Length: 416
Ligand code: PMP
Image (tube, rainbow, N blue to C red; front, side, top):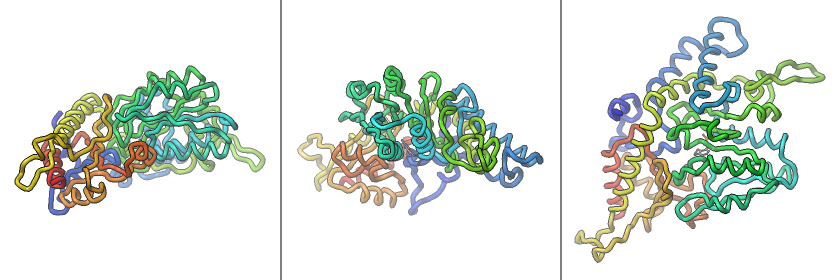
């Protein structure tokens, strides 16, 4: 893997921010886009723009073919059985809301139980709270350990014949923890519950095989996998999607409309009402090709190398007294890491003792370093650790050890 040649494909990285070279470590929020993706959007509007599925003219056929080509690329990317099981959404949030609304209409009744985990993003909490309110169902939460792992023994105890759905994050956006999702799915299936996997942070780092995982639903966003914003994927098993009612209604999702009765279109169109985000869906295929070309294993190995390099660097930072001596020569780390699970992706949350994360984030920005600060849309998880928020560095394929050296030195200056 040649990082320099990869970096050349990301024009945004080659700029100065506040007079310093940009160092972009906010990849868990959104990744930057390679030229192939940017060019695909431009090219689409310059040569192929037309509405899809309806027209028989050449541009409409070209646009439809390119749009559907992405569906096949996604099918392969996550190893779904059929391309009809791939539904394009606006993103992870949209996919979860679709399942929450539609699945609950078909399958949830008063007294049923839905299990989520203590490290969910708000987008995988609030939709289920609304379902529970509407249906009189009960929400249960898998606890999180001090290391930032899920307590799987406690999870097993939460499961029962009342459990209808488990909605769980594969990789935590705040902690980087990779949850044992296959085991979580297996245990849920034993009691007859279905499982929705929030794959927002998993899709760019891990090989995804929805059949091997036996996931019932799997959602992710293109913009976290080097693709455009405004595009997401909902994978669902055909039998479930077939049994669920449409989420939104309008054009595309119908077979026949009369004022007396409407019949719905087949999968996946039943869940794709209205004109979709055609250009960005088409460009998403280029992002998938980009990732496939490098290879997930290469990506993960390299990113883990960056993560370990950062953790070692951060752990070496010591507070200094005025004369430059360490305090009593003792180890007294001013950096506290959150998320120290054995299985992790290259996401590291931390706090600097005595400094608010927002102040740290602003001072790092002044040095051209972009990190995320705050609760990362996981307020209950922050509460679990007794903090308001963290500084989060998340690394991607185009980051380098030299950037981490600059970052660690910047934190060192903040500390001292
Ligand atoms: N779940 C997780 C784990 C996430 O990291 C995010 C994005 N931060 C989301 C859900 C929501 O994704 P989106 O905003 O793209 O819908």
